[in-house]
Length: 228
Length: 386
Image (cartoon, each protein chain N blue to C red):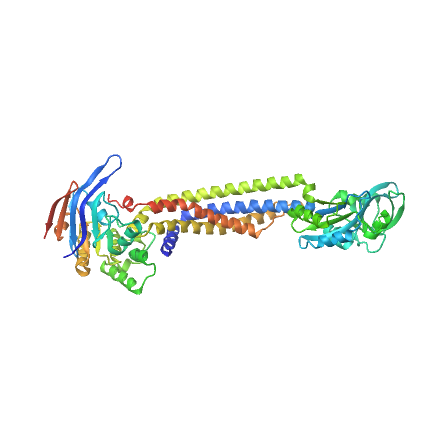
C-alpha cells in the first residue's frame, strides 16, 4: 500500500545556546489506512516526532512528505490549510473550547475551513456525535461533560473534516482503563470504516499490542519496528 | 472573518466579569471626556456670548478729522455682500452729551441707530423692561442705572445738552437693561435722525457695526471688508484685536481641556490593552488548539481586534449615556440661586460622535498588542503533554 507519511533523515535539535539533539536521523514511513503506535520512555522523542508529522514543528534537518507533498518547506498559511484538511489531532488533554458546546467544538475544524455549514456537514457532525455516544450531551458546554465525554468530543472533532491522518498523543492518558478501552475500540472502528491512518503515542503496552505496527523510540532513534 | 467574530463574542461572553469591568473603564473615560469637553465648550460659548454676543464684532470708523463716515451706504452695501458671514449690519451716529436733570447733570452718550437693525446686535427689545421702542423723532430710551440716578421714568421728557452748547428735549419712551451697567448708565438710545440732528452730523454716521456668523473669523472677515471698501480714511477693527487677553485665556482653557481629554484616553487605552493582553494568556490553550486545527495567524489575531472593537463600541455607547447623565445632573445640581446652571452646558453632537469614535479607535489600537501576541503564538508551546 502507498505511504501517506514519509520521514527522510530527520534530525531535530532544541535550544539555541545549549543545543540538545532529540531525534537522530529518523527514516520512517506510514502506510495508508494503517493503525500504528509509537512507544518509548518519556524524553525518547515520540511527541517531537508526532509534532513534526503534524507540521506543528519543523525538523532541523531532513525532509517530511505527506501525501507526497513536502511539508518542511511550506509557509504558515499552507501548513494551516494542510493541517485543517488532512489531519486530525487528539491530545492527552481534550483542549476543547469551553466557550462552545460539544457540537460547536466538533464543528470547529469545519468552520475554520469554511464558515458556512452545509446540511451534509451538520449531519456528519451529528453522526460522529452518535458514533462517539455523545448525542445526549451534544448541546452541553464543553466543560459541562465528564472527562471521557470530553475526550470523545475531541475525537469527533478530529474526524469532522474527514482527515486522512489522525495523530494522537496519549489520547487516553488521562482516562481510566475501561474508558480507555472504549476509546481504542472507537478509534479502531473509525480506522476500519473510514480508512483513516492512525499514529498513536501510548505508554500502555496492552493497547500498543493491539495495533498493526509498534514503533519503539529510544533516545531519539528507532529502537524497534514490529509489524503484525 | 466570521469565525473570528463568533469566537471573539464567545470569549467576551464567557469572561463576563472582565468584559463588564473593561466596558465600565472605557465608558468612564468617554463620559469624563464628554463631560469636560461639553463643559469647557459651554463655558467658552457662554463667555464669548456674554462678552461679544451683544456687541459689534467688526466696527468701521473714520480716521478723518471729524471722525465721521460720509459714504456709509456703500459700506453697508459692501458688508452685506459678505452674507452669510456678516449676519447683522447697523450704522450709528454717536456723540457725547450731558443730561440735565433736577438736581445735577450726568455725562451720557447719545447713540443714534437704525433701531430695527441695531436691535439685532444689541438685543435692545429684549432688554426693554418698561415702555416701548422709540418710533418718532426725538424719542429716546434710557438705561436702568441712568434712570435710577436721575429719577427719570418712562413717559418723562428730558433735557440734553450737546458739546456745542445746544440743547434739546427728548421724550423717554422706555427703559432698557442691557446687562452691562456702564452701558445702562450712559447710553441714550435714539433713532439715527434724532442723533444726527442733535449732534450736527448731517447725513454722516460715526461708525458701521456688524456681527459675523463665525466670531473667530472676525479678523479675516474684517480684513476682507476693509479690502473691499479700500478707503484710506476708514479703519476696520474687530473684537479679537480688542480682546487679546480674553482670547489667550480661552486658548489656554482649550489646551488644558484637550490635555485632560488626551490623558483620559491614554489611560483608557492602556487599561484595555493590559486586560486584553491578559486575556490572550488566559485563552492561549484555545488559541493553540485552533491553530493546530488550522486557523490562520491572521484570523487568530482578528479575534482580539474584534474584541477590542466590540468593547470599544459598547464602552462608547455606555460612556455617552453616562456623560449625558453627568451633564444632566450638573445642570440640575450646580445651579445659581435663580436656578440657572452655573455653566450652561453646550451639547455638540459632532464632538460627542468624535469622542465615541476616539474610544472605538483606541480600543482597536489597544487590541493590536494582544492581536500580535496571538498571531505569534506557537501551538506546540501550548499543547504539551504533561
